[in-house]
Amino acid sequence: MDVNQLNFKHLYYFWRVAKEGSLTHAANQIHTSQSALSTQIRQLENRLDTPLFDRQGRHLELTAKGQQVFTYAENIFGLGEQMLGWLDGREEGTTRVRVGSVSTMSRNFQVNWLRPLLRDPSVVLSVDSGSLQTLIERLLRHQLDVVLANEPVPSDPTRPVSSRFLGSQIISLVGRADRWAGASLQVPEELDAVEMAMPSVRHSVRLQFDALCFAAGVQPRVRAEIDDMTMLRLIARDSGWLSILPEVVVQDELHSGELVHVGQSSQLTEHFYAITVQHGRLVGPLNQLLVDAATRTIFT
Image: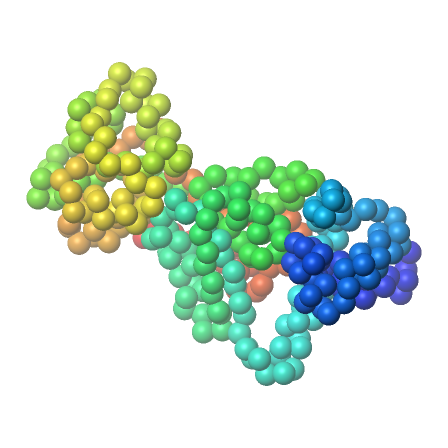
């Protein structure tokens, strides 16, 4: 079919339903009936000769081709909304960048990576945290532009995403300077019965560390299991316990001398990824940030 045979009104209705994730919400937003909306989306599917939604009762789920069509529609109508906003003088000269970050990620790492956007006066930045699964679902609904994670996400026809490697860091053992200055311990061999604060078992670092300890027959004395890296940083700073974590988490305390490096293992590393929708349109500043990722220092 030629592009002049494509009904852009039907495509727009499809885009709004996919974006809202609900026929009811979309109908309310564009002030039309659900039946009219459903009829016109079916007409679009007939014209494209492919189903765009899997329908299970009232629940709508994008098909693999529906995901791709939605990506193109997001580019078309997203740019259209930006153009109208510019013509109306709304947020003139600004670009909104929507970032999702896995809740177990270091806040220092996030700020380090986002710093070029913080310096750009044209950027309006929003950052949300949550579980990886929830964030990926929001990414696929184009409610986020990028997800920062410490593991890659496999791509498949129902989940067309790209995981871009940003860097990795060896995990370190750190402790308060007034107790551990000058100490150097082998990880994990010299940690038997040592009091420690650690990431929770939801964190890949903890799983790696537990496996090393099991292989070495070592049992540290776990005093705290912390899911949030910011909280773990505070525990490391204010307790006398050792902590196992990426140095980027405590970069300020190491620089000031409150905490000291006590040991590390090359078998303990954390990897960092930026996850985006395949073939999706990335706003200019974010696209440049991803292009420059390989040449930037993001751990200091």
